[in-house]
Length: 222
Image (cartoon, rainbow, N blue to C red; front, top):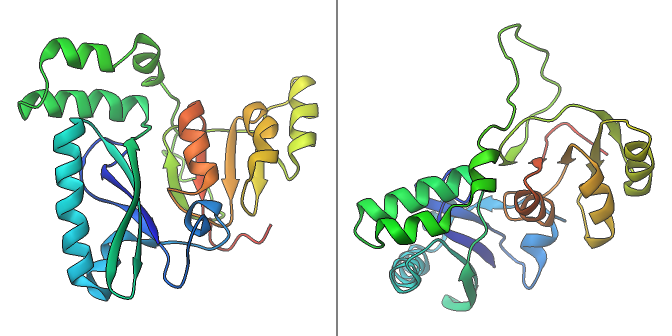
Protein backbone atom coordinates (compact mmCIF):
# COMPACT_ATOMS: atom_id res chain seq x y z
CA UNK A 1 0.00 0.00 0.00
CA UNK A 2 1.25 3.48 -0.69
CA UNK A 3 0.76 7.21 -1.11
CA UNK A 4 1.93 9.01 -4.22
CA UNK A 5 2.00 12.59 -5.48
CA UNK A 6 2.08 13.66 -9.11
CA UNK A 7 4.65 16.31 -8.16
CA UNK A 8 6.87 16.88 -5.16
CA UNK A 9 4.66 18.70 -2.57
CA UNK A 10 7.79 20.15 -0.94
CA UNK A 11 9.53 21.58 -4.02
CA UNK A 12 6.90 21.40 -6.79
CA UNK A 13 9.23 19.57 -9.16
CA UNK A 14 7.91 16.86 -11.47
CA UNK A 15 9.02 13.29 -10.84
CA UNK A 16 8.23 10.10 -8.96
CA UNK A 17 7.37 11.07 -5.40
CA UNK A 18 5.79 9.02 -2.64
CA UNK A 19 6.18 6.15 -0.20
CA UNK A 20 4.94 2.59 0.03
CA UNK A 21 5.11 -0.40 2.33
CA UNK A 22 5.14 -4.08 1.40
CA UNK A 23 2.99 -6.46 3.45
CA UNK A 24 0.86 -3.60 4.70
CA UNK A 25 -2.61 -2.17 4.32
CA UNK A 26 -4.90 0.66 5.36
CA UNK A 27 -3.28 3.44 7.36
CA UNK A 28 0.09 1.72 7.78
CA UNK A 29 1.93 4.13 5.46
CA UNK A 30 0.66 7.41 6.96
CA UNK A 31 0.66 6.13 10.55
CA UNK A 32 4.45 6.38 10.66
CA UNK A 33 4.80 3.12 12.62
CA UNK A 34 7.27 1.71 10.08
CA UNK A 35 9.86 3.39 7.92
CA UNK A 36 8.52 3.53 4.38
CA UNK A 37 10.23 2.75 1.09
CA UNK A 38 10.54 5.29 -1.75
CA UNK A 39 8.03 4.82 -4.54
CA UNK A 40 10.85 4.40 -7.09
CA UNK A 41 11.71 1.03 -5.50
CA UNK A 42 8.29 -0.30 -6.52
CA UNK A 43 9.44 -0.43 -10.14
CA UNK A 44 11.93 -3.17 -9.31
CA UNK A 45 9.40 -5.12 -7.24
CA UNK A 46 6.37 -4.94 -9.57
CA UNK A 47 7.07 -3.07 -12.81
CA UNK A 48 3.65 -3.75 -14.35
CA UNK A 49 1.79 -2.19 -11.41
CA UNK A 50 4.32 0.64 -11.24
CA UNK A 51 3.84 1.52 -14.92
CA UNK A 52 0.05 1.37 -14.54
CA UNK A 53 0.24 3.64 -11.50
CA UNK A 54 2.37 6.19 -13.37
CA UNK A 55 -0.13 6.24 -16.27
CA UNK A 56 -3.09 6.75 -13.92
CA UNK A 57 -1.26 9.53 -12.05
CA UNK A 58 -0.67 11.35 -15.34
CA UNK A 59 -4.35 11.01 -16.27
CA UNK A 60 -5.50 12.29 -12.88
CA UNK A 61 -3.27 15.36 -13.03
CA UNK A 62 -4.49 16.13 -16.55
CA UNK A 63 -8.08 15.95 -15.28
CA UNK A 64 -7.67 18.02 -12.10
CA UNK A 65 -5.02 20.33 -13.62
CA UNK A 66 -3.18 20.36 -10.31
CA UNK A 67 -0.98 18.36 -7.95
CA UNK A 68 -2.81 15.16 -6.97
CA UNK A 69 -2.42 13.17 -3.74
CA UNK A 70 -3.17 9.49 -4.43
CA UNK A 71 -3.60 6.43 -2.21
CA UNK A 72 -3.29 2.97 -3.70
CA UNK A 73 -3.04 -0.71 -2.84
CA UNK A 74 -1.59 -3.59 -4.84
CA UNK A 75 -3.08 -6.98 -3.99
CA UNK A 76 -1.99 -10.15 -5.77
CA UNK A 77 -0.55 -8.13 -8.64
CA UNK A 78 -3.68 -5.98 -9.17
CA UNK A 79 -3.52 -2.22 -8.64
CA UNK A 80 -6.43 -0.64 -6.75
CA UNK A 81 -6.81 3.14 -6.62
CA UNK A 82 -8.32 4.02 -3.24
CA UNK A 83 -8.74 7.79 -3.49
CA UNK A 84 -7.31 10.98 -4.91
CA UNK A 85 -7.57 14.65 -4.03
CA UNK A 86 -5.77 17.90 -4.80
CA UNK A 87 -2.66 17.62 -2.63
CA UNK A 88 -1.38 19.93 0.10
CA UNK A 89 1.91 21.62 -0.69
CA UNK A 90 4.46 24.02 0.73
CA UNK A 91 4.47 27.67 -0.27
CA UNK A 92 7.53 27.15 -2.46
CA UNK A 93 5.86 24.20 -4.18
CA UNK A 94 2.65 26.18 -4.77
CA UNK A 95 4.62 28.88 -6.57
CA UNK A 96 6.65 26.40 -8.66
CA UNK A 97 3.65 24.21 -9.56
CA UNK A 98 1.56 27.19 -10.66
CA UNK A 99 4.45 28.46 -12.80
CA UNK A 100 5.08 25.07 -14.37
CA UNK A 101 1.39 24.52 -15.16
CA UNK A 102 1.33 27.87 -16.97
CA UNK A 103 4.46 26.94 -18.93
CA UNK A 104 2.86 23.60 -19.83
CA UNK A 105 -0.30 25.34 -21.07
CA UNK A 106 -2.50 23.62 -18.47
CA UNK A 107 -3.72 26.82 -16.76
CA UNK A 108 -3.51 30.52 -17.60
CA UNK A 109 -1.88 33.32 -15.63
CA UNK A 110 -5.14 34.41 -13.99
CA UNK A 111 -5.68 30.90 -12.60
CA UNK A 112 -2.05 30.73 -11.46
CA UNK A 113 -2.27 33.93 -9.44
CA UNK A 114 -5.36 32.61 -7.65
CA UNK A 115 -3.52 29.45 -6.61
CA UNK A 116 -0.74 31.26 -4.71
CA UNK A 117 -1.70 33.47 -1.78
CA UNK A 118 0.22 36.33 -0.23
CA UNK A 119 0.63 34.29 2.95
CA UNK A 120 2.26 31.49 0.97
CA UNK A 121 4.70 33.88 -0.66
CA UNK A 122 5.62 35.16 2.82
CA UNK A 123 6.51 31.61 3.81
CA UNK A 124 9.24 31.63 1.17
CA UNK A 125 11.21 33.65 3.72
CA UNK A 126 11.55 30.59 6.00
CA UNK A 127 14.87 30.49 7.89
CA UNK A 128 17.67 28.10 6.94
CA UNK A 129 20.63 26.76 8.90
CA UNK A 130 24.02 28.45 8.60
CA UNK A 131 26.33 25.60 7.57
CA UNK A 132 29.43 27.76 7.15
CA UNK A 133 30.82 26.65 10.54
CA UNK A 134 30.28 22.93 9.74
CA UNK A 135 28.06 22.16 12.76
CA UNK A 136 28.16 18.67 14.27
CA UNK A 137 25.53 16.39 12.73
CA UNK A 138 23.77 14.19 15.27
CA UNK A 139 21.40 12.30 12.98
CA UNK A 140 19.97 12.30 9.46
CA UNK A 141 16.34 12.01 8.43
CA UNK A 142 13.86 12.80 5.69
CA UNK A 143 13.25 16.51 5.25
CA UNK A 144 9.45 16.40 5.12
CA UNK A 145 8.88 20.16 4.99
CA UNK A 146 11.14 23.16 4.32
CA UNK A 147 12.75 25.55 6.74
CA UNK A 148 14.91 25.30 9.83
CA UNK A 149 13.93 25.19 13.50
CA UNK A 150 15.83 25.64 16.76
CA UNK A 151 14.64 24.80 20.26
CA UNK A 152 14.88 22.51 23.27
CA UNK A 153 14.07 18.85 22.61
CA UNK A 154 10.76 17.92 24.25
CA UNK A 155 9.40 14.38 24.17
CA UNK A 156 5.81 15.02 25.23
CA UNK A 157 3.14 17.13 23.52
CA UNK A 158 1.71 18.49 26.79
CA UNK A 159 5.15 19.56 27.98
CA UNK A 160 5.75 21.25 24.62
CA UNK A 161 2.58 23.30 25.08
CA UNK A 162 3.48 24.22 28.66
CA UNK A 163 7.03 25.29 27.79
CA UNK A 164 5.87 27.26 24.75
CA UNK A 165 3.43 29.20 26.96
CA UNK A 166 6.41 30.16 29.13
CA UNK A 167 8.19 31.59 26.10
CA UNK A 168 10.50 28.63 25.41
CA UNK A 169 11.27 27.50 21.87
CA UNK A 170 10.88 23.73 21.64
CA UNK A 171 11.27 20.89 19.14
CA UNK A 172 8.72 18.10 19.59
CA UNK A 173 10.58 14.78 19.33
CA UNK A 174 8.51 11.60 18.99
CA UNK A 175 8.77 8.06 17.60
CA UNK A 176 5.79 8.98 15.41
CA UNK A 177 3.01 11.49 15.90
CA UNK A 178 -0.73 10.93 16.12
CA UNK A 179 -3.73 13.28 16.40
CA UNK A 180 -3.24 13.53 20.18
CA UNK A 181 0.09 15.27 19.54
CA UNK A 182 -1.50 18.11 17.54
CA UNK A 183 -1.41 20.74 20.35
CA UNK A 184 2.30 20.02 20.85
CA UNK A 185 2.95 20.20 17.12
CA UNK A 186 1.25 23.61 16.98
CA UNK A 187 3.27 24.88 19.95
CA UNK A 188 6.63 23.56 18.70
CA UNK A 189 9.02 25.30 16.34
CA UNK A 190 9.58 22.00 14.55
CA UNK A 191 8.88 18.27 14.71
CA UNK A 192 11.39 15.40 14.65
CA UNK A 193 10.38 11.72 14.49
CA UNK A 194 12.46 8.56 14.48
CA UNK A 195 9.97 6.71 12.27
CA UNK A 196 7.91 7.47 9.18
CA UNK A 197 8.56 9.27 5.91
CA UNK A 198 7.34 12.12 3.73
CA UNK A 199 3.75 10.91 3.80
CA UNK A 200 3.46 10.05 7.50
CA UNK A 201 1.15 11.93 9.90
CA UNK A 202 3.89 14.24 11.18
CA UNK A 203 5.00 15.21 7.67
CA UNK A 204 1.54 15.89 6.25
CA UNK A 205 0.34 17.91 9.25
CA UNK A 206 3.60 19.87 9.52
CA UNK A 207 3.50 20.85 5.85
CA UNK A 208 -0.08 22.02 6.24
CA UNK A 209 0.89 24.22 9.20
CA UNK A 210 4.10 25.51 7.63
CA UNK A 211 6.18 23.81 10.32
CA UNK A 212 9.66 22.38 9.84
CA UNK A 213 9.59 18.58 10.09
CA UNK A 214 12.15 15.78 9.80
CA UNK A 215 10.95 12.15 9.83
CA UNK A 216 12.65 8.76 10.03
CA UNK A 217 15.79 10.12 11.69
CA UNK A 218 18.34 7.31 11.81
CA UNK A 219 20.42 6.62 14.92
CA UNK A 220 17.64 8.20 16.96
CA UNK A 221 15.86 5.94 19.44
CA UNK A 222 13.25 8.08 21.14
